[in-house]
Image 1: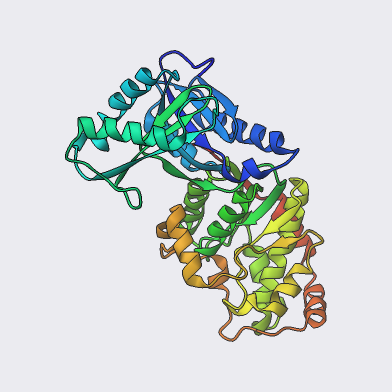
Image 2: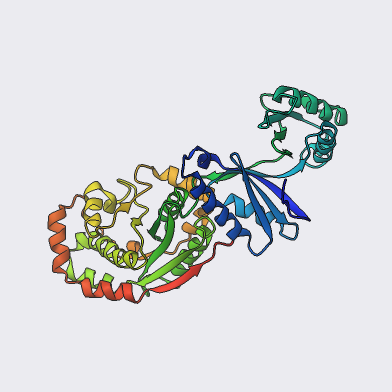
Length: 397
């Protein structure tokens, strides 16, 4: 590869959805390049592009696990692998293949395999089938006990013929999507539950750069509950390319709502107040949307009527990426992204602590707007937003 760093490791990165973009593809690729290089800073690296691929050359002093974690948590990457490269002379290709399969996973000499070739450089004299057959012979020559299985192999030797030849054996799936930052900025209402971290992860996958907001009602919610949310933000940090967590002291607002609204309206009024505070902070941070972890019909405050009412508290769009998912789907995603075990720690947030026994399920929006107005809570909410405590959350894996 031209301009490959000396004393470095090479990684081949597949771009996935970005490759389908039209005239603005360079904008997506530039953002992805910046996001990758941020993750592996301060190690010296070089990132080049060629027809649906990035080639990342990283100083060998950078631990391989650091690179893998960085690439695995960066949206816009369909998959990647540590690779080796050589010139297009056939004997050099054979020798490089032998060196590569001498390491895991081929090195035990057992099991089934296939060779999968891609000839992007059409002037290369062999077609893909011929390359596969010839290199399959190389594998069998070295490991005669192995068997070819083109349908369900245990091991695969990948070969890509481009300006140079690239080979690799153990590709790792990326998280797909498009690069964080290409779709603008939003504010995630992050609770200590299962849902909101998943909502944030899903919107980051669609390129949204997110700040986070948490409502804390000490002493009704514990310091452990706050720490749990900080830990969730840290778990999300690499996927979000870093974030800022604003913690709002919501105790005065909660108590005011408890004393100035009907019991069955407490949850609705609290959610509406949160949206009001989020609106203030979002505008200060120039966020164009709010993001919540609500799913239609999951709890009393997530009926269609309730969500319409709470959305009316802001002129900023409220995105609910989980709205059509059931709980099991959300849990499976939480497990996948590594937030589930933290989310289920037994430290309740203020939504749970102040919930009424029999919440209003089908509110009339105009009636509830009148009830909210009569509470005269706006000054308290402005104070909550102004006094929020800010925490910087790293993009580091």
